Length: 343
Image 1 (spheres, rainbow, N blue to C red):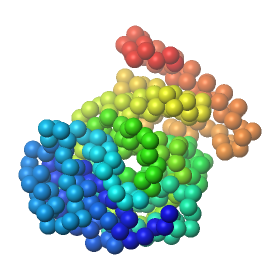
Image 2 (spheres, rainbow, N blue to C red):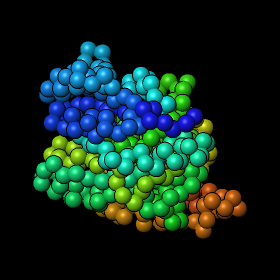
Image 3 (tube, rainbow, N blue to C red):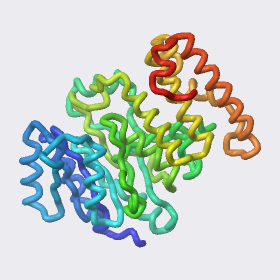
Image 4 (cartoon, rainbow, N blue to C red):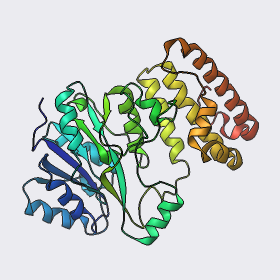
Protein backbone atom coordinates (compact mmCIF):
# COMPACT_ATOMS: atom_id res chain seq x y z
CA UNK A 1 0.00 0.00 0.00
CA UNK A 2 1.35 3.40 -0.94
CA UNK A 3 0.65 6.47 1.13
CA UNK A 4 -0.73 8.84 -1.52
CA UNK A 5 -2.54 12.15 -1.59
CA UNK A 6 -6.32 11.92 -1.25
CA UNK A 7 -6.11 8.66 0.68
CA UNK A 8 -7.13 9.64 4.24
CA UNK A 9 -10.63 9.63 5.66
CA UNK A 10 -11.00 12.11 8.52
CA UNK A 11 -13.73 11.22 11.03
CA UNK A 12 -15.28 14.02 13.10
CA UNK A 13 -17.95 13.32 15.74
CA UNK A 14 -20.05 16.45 16.26
CA UNK A 15 -21.94 17.30 19.43
CA UNK A 16 -22.94 20.88 20.28
CA UNK A 17 -19.98 22.25 18.35
CA UNK A 18 -21.71 24.79 16.12
CA UNK A 19 -19.13 27.41 17.03
CA UNK A 20 -16.13 25.27 16.09
CA UNK A 21 -16.96 22.57 13.54
CA UNK A 22 -16.39 24.66 10.41
CA UNK A 23 -12.84 25.49 11.50
CA UNK A 24 -12.16 21.81 12.18
CA UNK A 25 -13.45 20.75 8.75
CA UNK A 26 -11.50 23.43 6.92
CA UNK A 27 -8.27 22.48 8.69
CA UNK A 28 -8.63 18.96 7.28
CA UNK A 29 -9.79 19.83 3.77
CA UNK A 30 -6.78 22.05 3.04
CA UNK A 31 -4.43 19.10 3.50
CA UNK A 32 -3.69 17.27 0.22
CA UNK A 33 -3.63 13.88 1.97
CA UNK A 34 -7.32 14.13 2.92
CA UNK A 35 -9.75 12.38 0.59
CA UNK A 36 -12.92 12.91 2.61
CA UNK A 37 -14.30 14.29 5.86
CA UNK A 38 -17.01 12.27 7.58
CA UNK A 39 -19.17 14.28 9.97
CA UNK A 40 -21.17 12.18 12.43
CA UNK A 41 -23.75 14.44 14.06
CA UNK A 42 -24.41 13.07 17.54
CA UNK A 43 -27.80 14.48 18.51
CA UNK A 44 -26.72 18.05 19.19
CA UNK A 45 -29.11 20.47 20.87
CA UNK A 46 -27.64 23.54 19.17
CA UNK A 47 -27.59 24.20 15.41
CA UNK A 48 -24.64 21.89 14.70
CA UNK A 49 -26.75 19.68 12.42
CA UNK A 50 -27.78 22.61 10.23
CA UNK A 51 -24.17 23.74 9.91
CA UNK A 52 -23.04 20.22 9.02
CA UNK A 53 -25.74 19.97 6.34
CA UNK A 54 -24.57 23.24 4.83
CA UNK A 55 -20.94 22.12 4.86
CA UNK A 56 -21.92 18.91 3.05
CA UNK A 57 -23.68 20.92 0.37
CA UNK A 58 -20.69 23.20 -0.12
CA UNK A 59 -18.03 20.51 -0.57
CA UNK A 60 -18.34 17.06 -2.17
CA UNK A 61 -15.52 15.74 0.04
CA UNK A 62 -17.80 16.04 3.07
CA UNK A 63 -20.26 13.31 4.01
CA UNK A 64 -22.74 13.68 6.86
CA UNK A 65 -24.14 10.87 9.01
CA UNK A 66 -26.51 10.79 11.98
CA UNK A 67 -27.57 8.11 14.44
CA UNK A 68 -30.99 6.51 14.25
CA UNK A 69 -33.65 9.02 15.39
CA UNK A 70 -30.87 11.62 15.69
CA UNK A 71 -29.95 10.10 19.04
CA UNK A 72 -26.94 11.06 21.14
CA UNK A 73 -24.73 7.96 21.23
CA UNK A 74 -21.38 9.42 22.28
CA UNK A 75 -18.06 10.05 20.55
CA UNK A 76 -17.05 6.38 20.47
CA UNK A 77 -20.21 5.20 18.73
CA UNK A 78 -19.97 8.14 16.34
CA UNK A 79 -16.40 7.29 15.39
CA UNK A 80 -17.51 3.71 14.75
CA UNK A 81 -20.04 5.00 12.22
CA UNK A 82 -17.24 6.89 10.52
CA UNK A 83 -14.97 3.84 10.44
CA UNK A 84 -17.71 1.71 8.91
CA UNK A 85 -18.29 4.23 6.12
CA UNK A 86 -14.73 5.41 5.42
CA UNK A 87 -13.42 4.95 1.89
CA UNK A 88 -9.76 5.89 2.33
CA UNK A 89 -6.97 3.42 2.99
CA UNK A 90 -6.09 5.43 6.08
CA UNK A 91 -8.21 6.86 8.89
CA UNK A 92 -7.55 9.91 11.04
CA UNK A 93 -9.68 11.36 13.80
CA UNK A 94 -10.54 14.94 14.67
CA UNK A 95 -12.82 16.36 17.34
CA UNK A 96 -15.20 19.08 16.23
CA UNK A 97 -13.64 21.70 18.50
CA UNK A 98 -10.04 20.84 17.52
CA UNK A 99 -8.13 21.50 14.31
CA UNK A 100 -5.18 20.19 12.32
CA UNK A 101 -1.93 22.04 11.66
CA UNK A 102 -0.19 22.02 8.24
CA UNK A 103 2.33 19.36 9.40
CA UNK A 104 -0.42 16.94 10.47
CA UNK A 105 0.57 14.11 8.08
CA UNK A 106 4.19 15.04 7.46
CA UNK A 107 5.70 12.10 9.38
CA UNK A 108 3.04 9.62 8.23
CA UNK A 109 4.01 9.83 4.59
CA UNK A 110 7.59 8.73 5.23
CA UNK A 111 6.81 6.12 7.89
CA UNK A 112 4.04 4.35 6.01
CA UNK A 113 6.05 4.29 2.79
CA UNK A 114 9.28 2.99 4.32
CA UNK A 115 7.83 0.71 7.02
CA UNK A 116 4.95 -1.27 5.51
CA UNK A 117 4.52 -3.33 8.69
CA UNK A 118 3.44 -0.25 10.68
CA UNK A 119 -0.30 -0.02 11.46
CA UNK A 120 -0.42 3.52 12.78
CA UNK A 121 1.50 6.71 13.49
CA UNK A 122 0.95 9.12 16.38
CA UNK A 123 2.13 12.65 17.07
CA UNK A 124 1.86 15.47 19.60
CA UNK A 125 -1.18 17.61 20.37
CA UNK A 126 -1.01 21.24 21.44
CA UNK A 127 -3.65 23.62 22.82
CA UNK A 128 -5.58 26.57 21.43
CA UNK A 129 -7.47 28.61 24.03
CA UNK A 130 -10.83 29.98 22.96
CA UNK A 131 -11.55 31.56 26.35
CA UNK A 132 -9.76 32.61 29.51
CA UNK A 133 -12.11 30.48 31.60
CA UNK A 134 -11.24 27.43 29.54
CA UNK A 135 -7.53 28.19 29.93
CA UNK A 136 -7.91 28.49 33.70
CA UNK A 137 -9.68 25.11 33.90
CA UNK A 138 -6.96 23.45 31.85
CA UNK A 139 -4.20 25.08 33.88
CA UNK A 140 -5.84 23.86 37.09
CA UNK A 141 -6.05 20.35 35.66
CA UNK A 142 -2.29 20.48 34.90
CA UNK A 143 -2.51 19.19 31.33
CA UNK A 144 0.71 20.95 30.37
CA UNK A 145 1.43 22.55 27.01
CA UNK A 146 1.75 19.41 24.89
CA UNK A 147 0.07 16.00 24.94
CA UNK A 148 2.88 13.68 23.94
CA UNK A 149 5.51 11.17 25.07
CA UNK A 150 8.98 12.19 26.21
CA UNK A 151 10.63 9.77 23.81
CA UNK A 152 10.00 7.33 20.98
CA UNK A 153 9.39 3.81 22.30
CA UNK A 154 9.40 0.85 19.96
CA UNK A 155 5.93 -0.52 19.17
CA UNK A 156 6.59 -3.39 21.60
CA UNK A 157 7.37 -0.95 24.41
CA UNK A 158 4.57 1.54 23.74
CA UNK A 159 2.04 0.05 26.14
CA UNK A 160 4.46 0.25 29.07
CA UNK A 161 5.23 3.87 28.19
CA UNK A 162 1.52 4.74 28.11
CA UNK A 163 1.07 3.02 31.48
CA UNK A 164 4.06 4.97 32.88
CA UNK A 165 5.86 1.71 33.59
CA UNK A 166 8.67 2.11 31.07
CA UNK A 167 12.08 2.78 32.69
CA UNK A 168 12.74 5.87 30.55
CA UNK A 169 9.75 6.87 28.39
CA UNK A 170 6.26 7.87 29.49
CA UNK A 171 3.37 10.08 28.48
CA UNK A 172 0.29 9.90 26.32
CA UNK A 173 -0.90 10.88 22.87
CA UNK A 174 -4.29 12.01 21.64
CA UNK A 175 -6.49 10.22 19.18
CA UNK A 176 -6.58 13.52 17.25
CA UNK A 177 -2.88 13.01 16.47
CA UNK A 178 -3.27 9.35 15.43
CA UNK A 179 -3.42 7.97 11.86
CA UNK A 180 -4.31 4.32 11.23
CA UNK A 181 -4.55 1.92 8.33
CA UNK A 182 -8.21 1.21 7.72
CA UNK A 183 -7.55 -2.51 7.27
CA UNK A 184 -6.88 -2.99 11.00
CA UNK A 185 -10.64 -2.64 11.56
CA UNK A 186 -11.56 -5.43 9.16
CA UNK A 187 -13.65 -8.19 10.70
CA UNK A 188 -14.00 -6.39 14.03
CA UNK A 189 -17.57 -6.01 15.27
CA UNK A 190 -16.82 -3.00 17.48
CA UNK A 191 -14.05 -0.47 17.18
CA UNK A 192 -14.62 1.94 20.04
CA UNK A 193 -16.14 0.97 23.38
CA UNK A 194 -19.45 2.17 24.84
CA UNK A 195 -17.97 4.55 27.46
CA UNK A 196 -18.94 8.22 27.37
CA UNK A 197 -15.64 9.31 28.97
CA UNK A 198 -12.09 8.02 28.37
CA UNK A 199 -13.28 5.90 25.44
CA UNK A 200 -10.32 7.19 23.43
CA UNK A 201 -7.81 6.23 26.15
CA UNK A 202 -9.22 2.70 26.23
CA UNK A 203 -9.00 2.53 22.43
CA UNK A 204 -5.36 3.71 22.40
CA UNK A 205 -4.36 1.26 25.14
CA UNK A 206 -5.96 -1.59 23.22
CA UNK A 207 -4.25 -0.56 19.99
CA UNK A 208 -0.87 -0.42 21.72
CA UNK A 209 -1.27 -4.12 22.61
CA UNK A 210 -2.62 -5.33 19.28
CA UNK A 211 -1.05 -3.11 16.57
CA UNK A 212 2.32 -1.69 15.58
CA UNK A 213 2.22 2.03 16.32
CA UNK A 214 5.20 4.27 15.54
CA UNK A 215 5.98 7.74 16.85
CA UNK A 216 5.86 10.53 14.31
CA UNK A 217 6.38 14.19 15.28
CA UNK A 218 6.25 14.22 19.09
CA UNK A 219 8.23 17.35 19.96
CA UNK A 220 5.84 19.85 18.36
CA UNK A 221 2.08 19.76 17.76
CA UNK A 222 0.52 18.37 14.61
CA UNK A 223 -2.93 19.45 15.78
CA UNK A 224 -4.42 21.74 18.44
CA UNK A 225 -7.08 20.95 21.00
CA UNK A 226 -9.66 23.71 21.25
CA UNK A 227 -9.92 24.69 24.91
CA UNK A 228 -13.16 26.42 25.90
CA UNK A 229 -15.63 26.57 28.76
CA UNK A 230 -17.37 23.28 27.94
CA UNK A 231 -14.59 20.74 27.31
CA UNK A 232 -15.72 17.29 28.47
CA UNK A 233 -12.52 16.34 30.26
CA UNK A 234 -12.47 19.31 32.67
CA UNK A 235 -16.24 19.35 33.18
CA UNK A 236 -16.54 15.64 33.85
CA UNK A 237 -18.75 15.17 36.91
CA UNK A 238 -18.65 11.38 36.82
CA UNK A 239 -16.26 10.57 39.66
CA UNK A 240 -16.18 6.90 38.64
CA UNK A 241 -15.31 7.45 34.97
CA UNK A 242 -11.69 6.31 35.45
CA UNK A 243 -12.89 3.28 37.40
CA UNK A 244 -15.11 2.40 34.43
CA UNK A 245 -12.15 2.88 32.11
CA UNK A 246 -9.88 0.45 33.98
CA UNK A 247 -12.74 -2.04 34.40
CA UNK A 248 -13.32 -1.94 30.64
CA UNK A 249 -9.64 -2.60 29.95
CA UNK A 250 -9.43 -5.35 32.57
CA UNK A 251 -12.46 -7.17 31.18
CA UNK A 252 -11.22 -6.70 27.61
CA UNK A 253 -7.80 -8.15 28.45
CA UNK A 254 -9.40 -11.19 30.09
CA UNK A 255 -11.85 -11.73 27.23
CA UNK A 256 -9.10 -11.45 24.62
CA UNK A 257 -6.86 -13.73 26.71
CA UNK A 258 -4.00 -11.27 26.77
CA UNK A 259 -0.70 -12.00 28.50
CA UNK A 260 -1.22 -12.61 32.24
CA UNK A 261 1.11 -9.72 33.04
CA UNK A 262 -1.10 -7.32 31.08
CA UNK A 263 -4.22 -8.59 32.85
CA UNK A 264 -2.51 -8.10 36.22
CA UNK A 265 -1.54 -4.54 35.32
CA UNK A 266 -5.12 -3.61 34.44
CA UNK A 267 -6.31 -5.41 37.56
CA UNK A 268 -3.89 -3.41 39.69
CA UNK A 269 -5.04 -0.11 38.17
CA UNK A 270 -8.64 -1.11 38.78
CA UNK A 271 -7.91 -1.83 42.44
CA UNK A 272 -5.98 1.40 42.98
CA UNK A 273 -8.80 3.40 41.39
CA UNK A 274 -11.21 1.79 43.85
CA UNK A 275 -8.86 2.82 46.64
CA UNK A 276 -8.68 6.36 45.32
CA UNK A 277 -12.45 6.67 45.30
CA UNK A 278 -12.79 5.27 48.82
CA UNK A 279 -9.93 7.13 50.51
CA UNK A 280 -9.05 10.64 49.35
CA UNK A 281 -5.83 10.86 51.35
CA UNK A 282 -4.47 7.55 50.12
CA UNK A 283 -5.81 8.30 46.67
CA UNK A 284 -3.96 11.61 46.58
CA UNK A 285 -0.72 9.82 47.38
CA UNK A 286 -1.31 7.22 44.68
CA UNK A 287 -2.31 9.62 41.93
CA UNK A 288 -0.74 13.00 42.71
CA UNK A 289 2.38 11.80 40.91
CA UNK A 290 1.34 9.19 38.38
CA UNK A 291 4.87 8.20 37.45
CA UNK A 292 6.09 8.01 41.05
CA UNK A 293 3.20 5.85 42.23
CA UNK A 294 3.50 3.46 39.29
CA UNK A 295 7.25 3.11 39.75
CA UNK A 296 6.59 2.38 43.43
CA UNK A 297 4.06 -0.35 42.67
CA UNK A 298 5.72 -1.82 39.59
CA UNK A 299 9.39 -1.25 40.38
CA UNK A 300 11.61 -3.49 38.27
CA UNK A 301 15.20 -3.56 36.93
CA UNK A 302 14.32 -4.26 33.31
CA UNK A 303 10.82 -5.34 32.35
CA UNK A 304 11.85 -6.00 28.78
CA UNK A 305 14.48 -8.55 29.78
CA UNK A 306 12.71 -11.95 29.72
CA UNK A 307 14.79 -13.17 32.66
CA UNK A 308 13.15 -10.54 34.88
CA UNK A 309 9.56 -11.57 34.19
CA UNK A 310 9.25 -13.95 37.12
CA UNK A 311 10.50 -11.27 39.49
CA UNK A 312 8.02 -8.84 38.00
CA UNK A 313 5.15 -11.31 38.41
CA UNK A 314 6.03 -11.86 42.07
CA UNK A 315 6.11 -8.11 42.68
CA UNK A 316 2.76 -7.76 40.93
CA UNK A 317 1.26 -10.54 43.04
CA UNK A 318 2.59 -8.92 46.22
CA UNK A 319 1.17 -5.57 45.15
CA UNK A 320 -2.28 -6.99 44.46
CA UNK A 321 -2.31 -8.69 47.87
CA UNK A 322 -1.27 -5.41 49.50
CA UNK A 323 -3.88 -3.44 47.59
CA UNK A 324 -6.53 -5.99 48.46
CA UNK A 325 -5.65 -5.80 52.15
CA UNK A 326 -5.88 -2.00 52.09
CA UNK A 327 -9.15 -2.18 50.23
CA UNK A 328 -10.68 -4.62 52.68
CA UNK A 329 -9.38 -2.68 55.67
CA UNK A 330 -10.72 0.61 54.40
CA UNK A 331 -14.00 -0.25 52.74
CA UNK A 332 -15.07 -3.61 54.20
CA UNK A 333 -18.09 -4.97 52.36
CA UNK A 334 -18.88 -1.71 50.57
CA UNK A 335 -16.46 -2.29 47.72
CA UNK A 336 -14.82 -5.63 48.43
CA UNK A 337 -17.21 -7.84 46.49
CA UNK A 338 -19.44 -5.19 44.94
CA UNK A 339 -18.53 -6.01 41.35
CA UNK A 340 -17.90 -9.71 41.78
CA UNK A 341 -14.19 -9.56 40.94
CA UNK A 342 -11.98 -12.27 42.37
CA UNK A 343 -8.94 -10.31 43.49
